[in-house]
Length: 27
Image 1: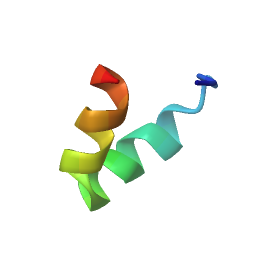
Image 2: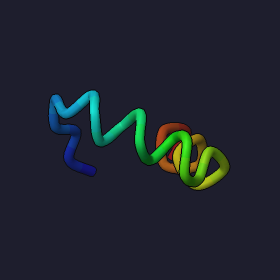
Image 3: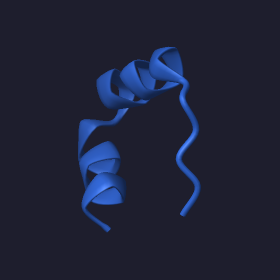
Image 4: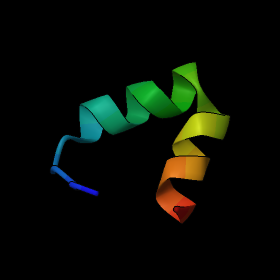
């Protein structure tokens, strides 16, 4: 699992698909 410092992508992903984003963060 690679975590890159890209806040704009993170925020965009969270807005577009919050469930998937949360699942990835918890995994």
